[in-house]
Image (cartoon, rainbow, N blue to C red; front, side, top):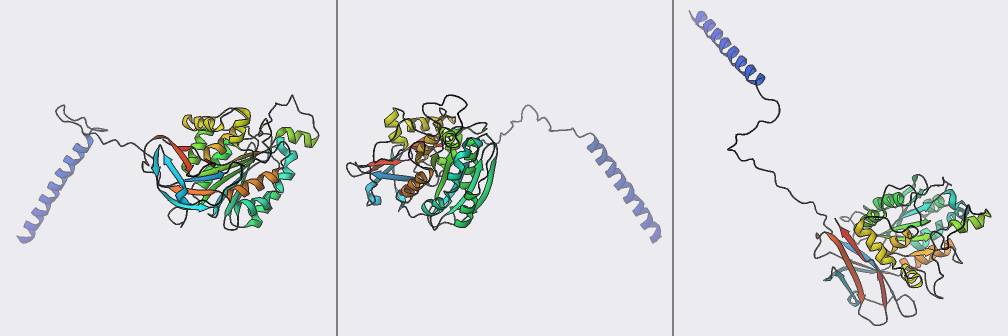
Length: 379
């Protein structure tokens, strides 16, 4: 009797399980595909939308101070400077005179159009390491023509940088300047990590190239926006296709422009360095205003002004080499300025306000002129 009861119970359990599985199968088969439409009386709750904003935690601005004679001034303290961001005075959190370590990308045009100048460019390795990078810095080397090639990643070895520069290969006739600048800015954006460094390093993009671009996808204004947000300062040495043609003793294909690419139309005043500011005074062109326009609109600038505008937008300097200034002398001058400039840092009081932020740097002393980056753009 006991065995019979157990058997009947097991059979009943099997029947119950079979019915449950059949109901579940029918329910699954009748389930609608995709989301169910709620009844009209039910209010659908929307996910909250949040605006994406970029927050700037630290702004570095190099500042070069000169007296009425054009000589650099080296005896100022942090209390002598005033920095404003969109008209609001900022507290300087870091102050240095030329000793902060340098992270640098050397961007070199190797186009066949400047092939006659490449022997001179190949000799600049020791100047780049000794006068620009310095004993505590690091550097990388990138070449560009129709393609962009990373020839040497970041290293503190002067020997590796000098060897790479001395073996620069000649490329094709193209010159993707803006795309190469975008690569250089991207490489510098994370060097070094802000969370591990004691002091902010100076991120330097050193460009040895013509001012013209051919075939780039990147827009100069967009590249300069990213450079400003990453605290990258751009220095440039303008190579000249006209000078290259003269040195190679080949007649130009057509009539040369009055102002060759990468050069200024007039020589600087005696005893002064040719900068975007002095060029503007000589030619009546406001390079800084041109640079600000390019950044605000994320567009390219007038052809032939790219290097000057890039330097002006980031607080650097452009030096032409068409006349009596050699490429080596230009690199040496930039190195001298770089290690004699003031480096000011601050955390903006309004760090998330979108649009263009205008930076002004002034000195509380008479007869002194300050050159610094004009601002930055927050999307």
